[in-house]
Length: 475
Picture (cartoon, one colour):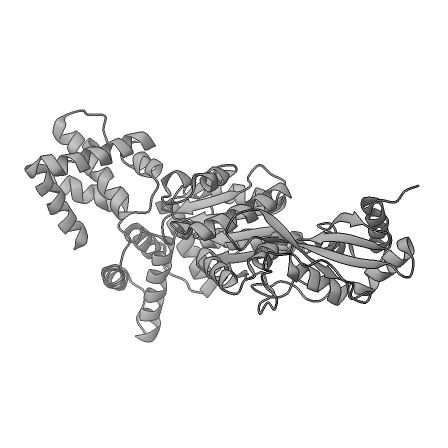
């Protein structure tokens, strides 16, 4: 029977698989392709130079044993490394390298210059070893599902997050994108999913990283000529969590490399989890092909917590810190601090500190004083509720009227202005803005914003409305 490169390599793999752990086999041997076979030499293709160096450092004896068994004692192994053409086009080329398992053999030099002769950085974190060396997941175990309280504002996101954590890469929620304003719990949920997955599937490689750090790593990989190693590192991850993915906006190179990493992970049923301050439909300067990928799975919004959820959050903080506060004071704080969870927690901590340091009993008066000072001194995220109040006060019109179905000119203008400023001053999605201002849809909000922009240039009185309201929001 005539031997082929594929048949020889399959026999080698059968031998190798019996002599190493399953995870090591999947990581380092499944990606290899047999490309050519001569009388006594087998050529295999590997994804990067980093990959080649790892095999030579850790598995050269195993490779030699497998190949000798198939082709005899004089067998040679040569690598072809698939690399990117530095001239800028997308056509791949290869570099031939002899294995250290035999003496170096003469190979024909290729004309295209080779990248990354001496890479300084093998990968962005820790070299992903098989036995005792592991990738640091970068997860914060303090952020878990136990202390991520469920409410109407986050029920869908939390439930979907639990589904993903139970079957990473196996649900239709891939990618899973969580979006919403500042301090609402997106990062907490992302970490909670990662922590849960690590507990249930310890063999899976989970990595949390911010979009900012990912971008910087990519820039460094380009500067050091090891872009392929960067890509291959991320292709090894089973569950990739990227925080604040909207920061990829306008960064063409980062978007391109993430697009290819995403495709590989998705095709191999690995889980991608993302957070953003806005829905995919509202992201700007993101390539259409990447946006289409973000819409493949599920996008779940976390909204501002309602009163009941805020009360539950405060009680959870108090229980965590071993502090007791009367129910009426808990409700007072929950009623008056409603921008986001981060601010709510800050107000409670300030209240506890004031009581402890000054040896004062926690009373409504103390709560009023602390909340007033805290809310005044903290740079608040302007909420949609606050914008509606400013607009309604300016036009001396009830908020209920603005949110009504009325088509009167003054009501429509007020409603349009509320939507315009909500889009300008908040990170809420157009759909969320519409739902909070009279239960309108995404298209209605978009139309309102365009109508306001047109009137600003054609109607002096209307422009004065805009300027006056803007000043009030800036106070």
